[in-house]
Amino acid sequence: MVERFLSLLARLGVLALLAASSAHAAPAASEARVERGRYLAVAGDCAACHTQAGKTPFSGGVPIASPLGTIYSTNITPSAAAGIGSYTQEEFSRALRRGVRADGSHLYPAMPYTAYAKLSDADTADLYAYFMHGVKADDTAPPKTALPFPFNVRLSMAFWNTLFLDTDVYRPDASRSAEWNRGGYLAQGLAHCGTCHTPRNFLMAEKPELYLQGGSLGTWYAPDITPGKAGWDHASLVDYLRTGHAKNGATAGGPMLEAIDKSFSKMAPQDIRAIATYLADVPGPAHGAAQASAQASAPAPAPVKAVAAGDVAEMAGAIGKGERLYRNNCASCHQAGGEGMRGLPALRAHTVLRYPSADNVAMAVLEGVWPEEGQGMPGFAAELSDSEVAEVSNYAMAAFGNSAVRIDAARVAELRQGGAASPLLLLARAGMGAGVVALLVLVWWLARRRRRKQRR
Image 1 (cartoon, one colour):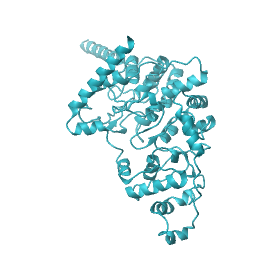
Image 2 (spheres, helix red, strand yellow):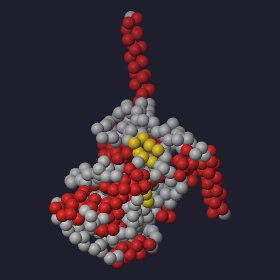
Image 3 (cartoon, one colour):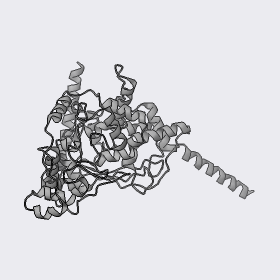
């Protein structure tokens, strides 16, 4: 009798534990909602930051270089121990669209919650359904982010959000087509185009008045993608987003290539067309058309005289160092005249050579360009010095792009190390962390004062 009573208590205890553990479990979701959430996660390129090669999808730990230091992505699997398994839908939405975790601590904007704030409630709910029911739980805790003081005080992000976070969801423009509005919703939200292509201010917030007008990512340069660029029409944009190549000779590299491989290339054709429709007619400055006209009227680069491989040594003293480096390291694939061969892209008049920065050329030389499928370009970081990378990059800019833009060895050294440090970090290292905090408070106060005046 006692044994039966104890057995009953044990069973009741197990049931109580199961009830307690399920109290925080996500509610059941239909298969259709989970699948729709899966697609939205692809469109949001979530795997790029939250999945390490060879590890459980979305288990985090991906090191993300920032001007303030390395930020490690979080585990967003439905693990209650290390991930977001205990999150309610409201807590998930707050993290996704406000940058605030369930425990109340703030995320850094390396997670583009400033763009995800545009997402609808329905899409947020479907994403929640996917991450709770369509992703395998993994209890591995990723490394903790440890930025220097005062940036390790996450509460400072509350002031930053007050200044810079626009919490309004996307509002369709009634004067535009449904396709344009779909593209605008995706580009502003899930695809977070502005996160890379909009320049940032001193406090590393996007400058809305310069929306999509290009900016440095520390190493790679995200170009101006406002309308009116020479050689870019709707079809070229669609091809580029789908494949990383366009008929104007453009080829994707760096973070854009990763976004195409993991996100854009896996999106529905109608959504890619919608994004292209939006980007081809996004409201913005008039300088785009003028810049395109200037590019179109610029003289084409002069033909480069082809030289047989056996003549390189003989001409070593008659050509510049950059050209010699190009012929010895690049011409076997891109040809001496930059025409390209065997499916490899031509360099002559390549769009990357029109940018106001040579960073992307130098980064391609350093790191190479490796798509998930097809032929890739090896990096030469181990073979070429900083000055040699600068020389060959400058040669390509001038000979094949007719560009006066140059890069020096000091900048190549910065690129090799992950980019220049933020001025804010330099202030902190100089023992002026308190001054940075005071500056944040002052800017916040001034912004609030300005907003109050505008309401009057």
